[in-house]
Length: 183
Image 1 (tube, rainbow, N blue to C red):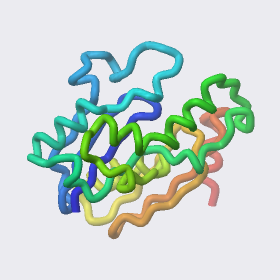
Image 2 (image 1 turned 90 degrees about the vertical axis):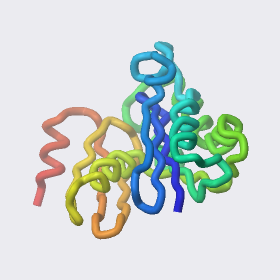
Image 3 (image 1 turned 135 degrees about the horizontal axis):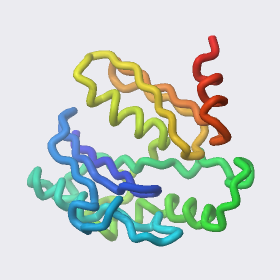
Image 4 (image 1 turned 180 degrees about the vertical axis):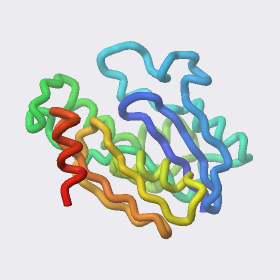
């Protein structure tokens, strides 16, 4: 199984290649673009993909985009809560979601030979938690993903590690702590 993980929608775009359960290459786009956090300093940059990082990962492993069995995109637009529901005023929110929905096609353009049908959306919090939990040096691990992204709750069973995630409004750390420590 050859899978490429893509983080692009928010900040620090990166790519990681996993072959038969082992990470064989990973890189952040800023290493190639020489831009801090990998994106241009503009109000809306969700459209920027880590295409150079992805190409490097594939080249490092001697693979072509057509060799991939799966591509995991670290945001699921179907789980996104509307900005106004979260009390946010974000004039670019609808564009971010449209971009994410079209990401499989954009990735196929950036990586010629990639079949857009192999691209799967992964809940943002699950992507965070899995990157930590699956890299842990233990057969079982617990991970708390606590980010400001607006995706709804999600759970992902990864081998012997189950990643459960919950998103709260970004009103205060105190509220989040109270919710996460409730018994």
